[in-house]
Image (tube, rainbow, N blue to C red; front, side):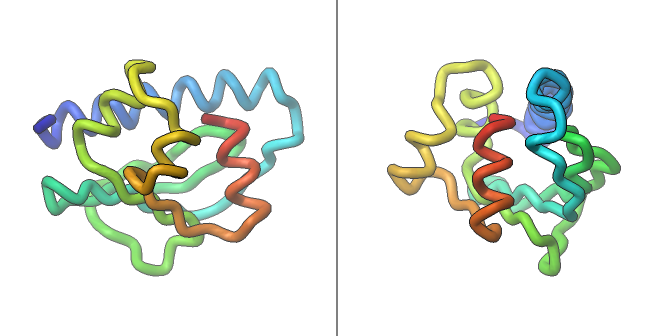
Length: 112
């Protein structure tokens, strides 16, 4: 099981990669939404804002009103960021849960 600090570092790395990928994709992934990432095994959450492809304003804590809600385990988050776990396959297998409207989900998938 990954630690909370390892997950926070993974989330920062993920945000940097998503921002770089968004810059390559231009305006096709224009998202400005509140989001929350919940780590099932640790019982913790981080919330922030998806903006221009990056996750900004990352803070500890839940946001039940976030328009994008992602749930997964700490190990799956770290594995995804390290490239050992594919987001789409994990989502299809039920390892990752995403609650978002269809358009946001399609844009998020492009970034990941």
